[in-house]
Length: 182
Image 1 (tube, rainbow, N blue to C red):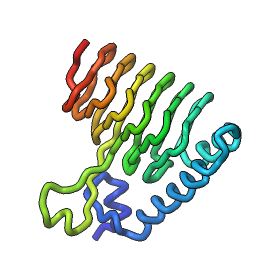
Image 2: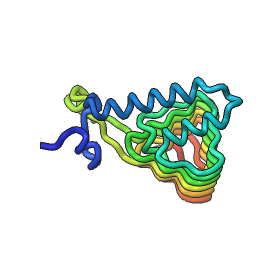
Image 3: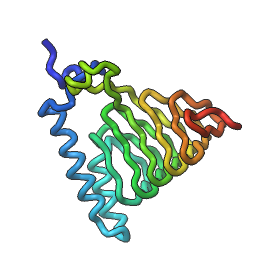
Image 4: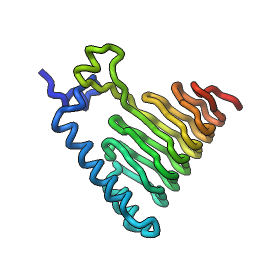
């Protein structure tokens, strides 16, 4: 019988209360708290914490606190990455973000979902799918990117959008659910 961690690593539904899985989240919570408490003028210290927290990051990563995530090591960002205030990345599965990307305040990127059945929710199961965001993407304020979504290159996600499906290159999407508007 597989452990919950083995299920997690193979992308199967797993119990998020498992102690090993909960330990990853506790580590991320500790590092996010440390990041959020650093004086905003001390970009060097902020970058050190982000480099410890994230799986990988390029040069010129600038993030406004508060920032929160689930695991941290599943986040991979490219060059010139910027977030505004109160961004949350629920990176239970990998989140890969390209170069020259900006995320507006109060936005959420989520890789985790829960079962549609009451039984599965009572079992505290999580279902995960990665999120991939291309280069030169601007995600506006108060946006939500749902599990399994791929956003192409040179995309604008209009403020307040809820992205439930893949977004093609060179487009602007907006609305709930988000649709291509240009």
